[in-house]
Image 1: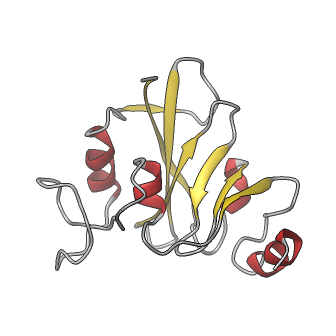
Image 2: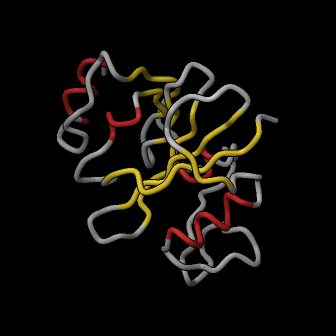
Image 3: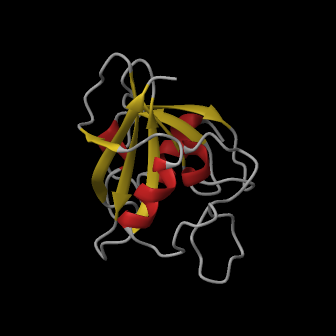
Amino acid sequence: MTFAEWISKARVHFPALTQENCRPTSPADDSYNCIAWAADDVDRWWWPDPLGQKYWPPAIPRTESIDAFEMAFALFGYSEKSSSTLEPGKQKIALFVGSHGRPTHAARQLPDGWWASKLGQQIDIEHELSAIEGPVYGTVAVVLARTDV
């Protein structure tokens, strides 16, 4: 499938996605998800499921809440609330929530100001932050920053 064909199919879930506001970076892979990707872990699927079937950092509540996700990313130094604007010397994570108010997605900001995301079991993309807002991931709830490491 070409990238144009993939975009055409993906627009059902991500209506703002275009060939101009995203670019593919890797093939589909179901061994990790967006939360793991944002944490720079491509070996595990992260989710705070109450039965402990997926990886979640020890001592962080296994609840689908922004607070729990903020605590998880704070372990990596992402503790400062910020804007999505590119800032020299800062690395950023954007946490999305759906209409139900629970976390749905995380994206990591790149040095050029674009964002990197793993789309579920699908491909990894680089994109403008708003390109993936919509019915699947909802909207950005918070952007967390840390000093560049």
